[in-house]
Amino acid sequence: MSTTTHHRPSPPAPWRSTFESHISLMPSPEFIFATVAPSSSSNPSHTKPTTPYVPRLRYCIYRGMWSQLPENKHNDAPKNPRVYNSDMPTFTTDVRMQKVGELFASSAGHAAKDEQVQGSGGGGPCEAVFWVKEKGTQWRIKGTAFVVAPDIEGEEDKESSGVRTVKSEIGGRMKFVEGGEDEEGEWSWGRELTAHFGNCSPGMRGSWKNPPPGTPVKGEPDKDHQLGQKVENLEDPIARSNFRVVVIKPDEVEQTDISDPATARRWKYTLITDARDGQGEWTKEELWP
Image (cartoon, rainbow, N blue to C red; front, top):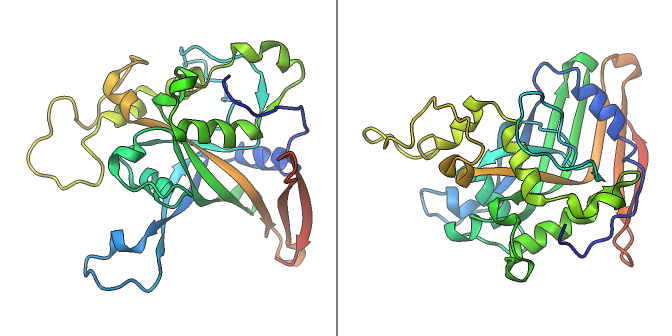
C-alpha cells in the first residue's frame, strides 16, 4: 500500500457498533447523500446567484466500511486480506453522475473541468442521512467524500495529485487490525476497488454501461450503452471505466432516537484531530432531540 500515513491500531469509533447493528436491520440500506454544487452551474437564467453553492441530494446504497468489504458468496473478485479497519462508509456510483463532479468542484482543489474529475480525488463537503425505521433512529454523518477511480493503482512516482490526496486522506483513517501489520504489503487499493465492483450484482454492474445519465434522449443509444445489461466480466472495460467507489470521511456523527417521544435521545460524536500527528479522538455529547 503506497501511502505515507501511519496506521497504528485503534479502537473503532464509539458510534460504529450501534450504527452497524441498526443498518443491519434495514431491508435495503438506503440513505440520502447531500453535496453542494456551484450555483452558477444550475442557474439557467444566468442572473447573478445569491449564494455561491446550492444543495444537491439523492438516495444511495450503503456498501459497508472502506477496507472491510461485506462478505458476498457470489463475489468472485480477488479480495484483500483483512489488514485494515476504518469508520468510513462507502457507496458506489458512476463517474458520469453529477455527484462526482460536485465532490471535485467543492473540494479544496476546485476541479471543475470534465477531464479533472475522471480520476481519483474529490474531497468536497457532504452529509449522509439514514432513517432506520426499525429503531426509530436517524443517523447523520457529516464530513468530506473522496472518489476512488481506476488510476488509484499504479507506479507511485506517476501518481496524480488526486491519487495522492485520496491515499493520504483516506489512508490516514485506515488502522491496522490485530496482526494486520504482517500483511500490509499484500493489501492493494486496486484490488479493493475491483472487489467492490464484484460485490455488485450483474445487473448493477450493467448500469455502468447505461447511456450517459442525465443527458437528453435523442434517438437510440449505441450498442455498447444500453439499458438493462448484465455484466459478468469483472474487467468489462466500459463498466469499469465508469465505476467509482465513494468513501465518506466523517468528522461528526449524530444519532437521534425518537422511538419513544417521552424518552427521545440525541447524541453528537465529534472527531477532534491532533494537529501534531493527525491522529483523532471521538468525543460524545448528549443533546436535546
